[in-house]
Length: 377
Image 1 (tube, helix red, strand yellow):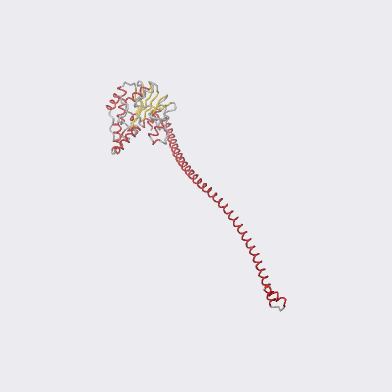
Image 2 (cartoon, rainbow, N blue to C red):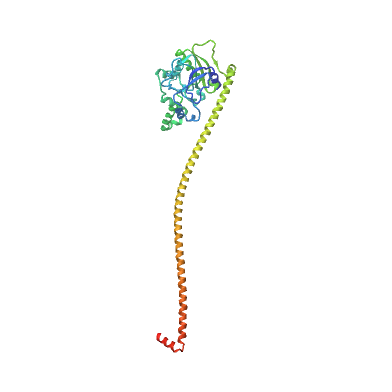
């Protein structure tokens, strides 16, 4: 946004920025900024998951504008205060505006912007009236009421009102996220700032402003604390006048902003790639663990099979020994049987020989043989 770049070029010294989150003001190098917020970076990431992959500023001071305003900072202690798109979230905007001027030194600058409801999701909501804001200030309000958030839901998320359970959850969510409690357009917010300065008799003057009609987004202004110097005049930053007055600064900061956006985009892509690699690595690790478990099961089964194989081998060797022994016995028996058969054959031959002899002797006419045969028969 060129109107912001030009305004930031007017800042110098030590100051604070409130509610910067992932989009801090691109101030000159001569500025030292301390960041303030109602929550830490970790709490912000939990409340705003859409910022999970974006770098957030480091919060040096936890500051609850609703309860404590800027009481953590002494009077006239800051050279500048930056409050972009924060004032619409607080319970007591007038108190916060007064506090911002209180902590500024003479010559210090207040940069304050609020969304122009015509260009935001608040377009269908009713404008917050000055009477309402002053009543909250005089009552010392320190917390946004449920009525504010119900009005926000009714205009922005009407579907949430159809179901009581959904509505209750939505109320918790919008309170946790500190959604818009108040609504202005450029004219009404300028009028509020001027009214606060006048009523509270604050010595301050408007250095420059940019309205929604010019930037299609917000009312943006930079104020300087102290008496109005004659050299300063109100400069409404229309593009033609702004470029003519601060052309070199505009070019420098525009180039720098382009580089920052490019680096931010590269960082975002790198973060996405890193997350993808982490997820892929986790999947590979899970698969490796699963494979390792399966391998262990196979190894266990292999061990059991090896033991069974060893047992079977022992049984095989025992059976082979038994078979060898049985075969030896069979061989010995066969040999014995063969010997017996030989002996039987020899006996048969002997018997046959005796029978022939007897037959010869029976047929012999010898008286001696006949007598012997008769005696033996």
